[in-house]
Image 1 (tube, rainbow, N blue to C red):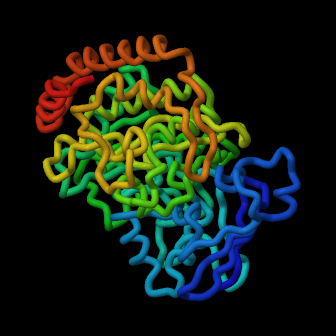
Image 2: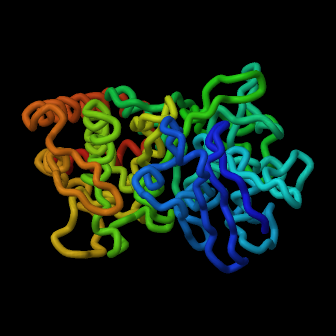
Image 3: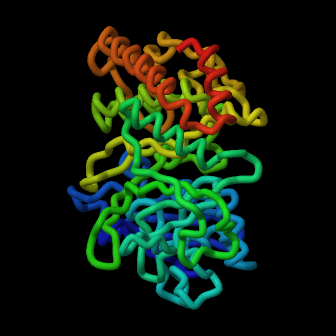
Length: 418
């Protein structure tokens, strides 16, 4: 396979070079990009390192984290067929519509985003996460799979036979979060049959959750302006398989306090307090799946990071097969361990305040909070007020929630220390 260029919006940022079908792929930043004092941010790992080149097998972690996972990955792999360097080939095929503002393309041998006539069909986009998803456009109030050259403004998330009421579960949690004062994307439920050109791999006879993409905004006719983003697996430069950091001894420096340190240092006190409230909300709603890829930064002006709207939040306590621990530790462990984060019901206000006041650095980033954003008392008051409001909000909206989810969250809240 030939090298591929990497662009960020209209700015050339570097080149990907595959070494061999089974070897590492190298990413080299362009000299023109490095020399630009006002360059848009591609990723924190590139900003915080002096190295011009980055390597990974089969891809550097930043690019691995742009690819689909789970159900969607299986669909895309089936459409791609048997090819060498599967991840690299997938990145090229999806490179015209990746998360954020990244574009990857190779001019030689027809490698690049597939056209409408290819066997790749409608899968010309990349959405991360294990749930089956589609990118949709809503031109003239019609929901449809975008044609070649178009981009979707919505993410359509489909249910799973393994998790009953998953779509309505996530819709309820997003609604609860929004009514509690957190920042969430626009969202609603539609019937699958309302989506035009729905691929045969997707069952239209079910409810589908629509979530508006915050990395796509109205732009020129037939296209969407792109806002760049990176999830925290990219921020911490780890592959997607390591998103549950407590399972990896080498990632003892990755925890909620470290994420909070980055948010505080890059995004400011307001976003940091929003982050703490979201950690509290994960505890309250019984969400054991807030892993590294479910936290992210975005760059509305291309240069300055902000915490993205809340996404991928589910009351996992409704599913007995899923553990009831936070996906990540709150603080670094006293010794290297593969133990999971704390039990959701055991988390206290003092635990959250410990995250707020954490001052030690570590890992690949040195951006950490030196103090709570407005003093410990003010943070404690804000968190206590948020939790009280969220609990009251749940009581008011619980009748709207599917019975399975309502019963599970009610039982969880009865035991939770927050």
